[in-house]
Image (cartoon, rainbow, N blue to C red; front, side):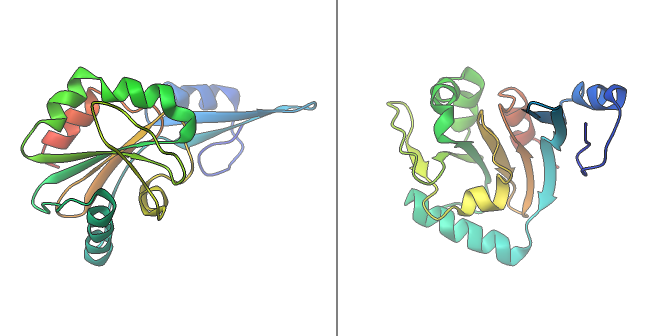
Amino acid sequence: MFDENGKAIGEKEFFSKLKSETYYKRAIVNDTAVIAKIYVRILEGKLDTSSYTNFMSFLEKTVNTKIDTTKTVVIYFFYESDKRLAKHYANTKNLKELNNNPSVQTFYMTEKGFHYKNRKHIFYEDSLDLVKQTFFIPNVCCGSAVILKPNGNYYKELGEFNSYKIPEKALSDW
């Protein structure tokens, strides 16, 4: 068992970390052993001014919509293996309320090569892989989300994001 830095840890520490919503695990089972590693699931950071400007320019081209850089941007991101979850999140009440909030711009996006259609929302393809490369490496299934504030601060949840926490975090001042 390994922690998020690749350091071997004991079973007690491994499972203790998993009790926190901050981490998730991946395990590989082979004929000799089960190799499990913890990954950080919830991250905060900041894009520098240049990266923020470039990202917003790309996003405008991808969604063919003017982005209001005074608003918080929320991106729900799905991999091809997430078709069922994409449908679920497109119909989630808490996200519907956030999507209709005038202080936020929300976008449903898919990985490059994944074309998903839904009657309630437009799903944009991350055709240049910029959203994925900027916010969603390593690849994590089950839907991910990022909140990007106008000052470049971001908060992201990798893998089956919390539909209660995302709206709350997006509307708070941090």
